[in-house]
Length: 83
Image (cartoon, rainbow, N blue to C red; front, side):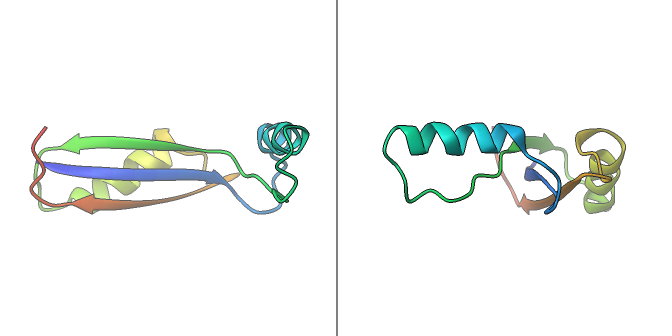
């Protein structure tokens, strides 16, 4: 079993209204040092071992998990994880 950690964020230049709202709220709470917030998604997948796991993860990201037109993604695969 492998654990895959996937991080998905909006590409630079894509408006991030949720990030802007979080930044505004943090500034209102007095955290004025926060100058920029980008909000994204984080997922963990537990996947059976296979020879082509990285290609499968790429396919999952492109076909379902991320929108490659407006989002970037990266992932890491941890070896030998038990649930």
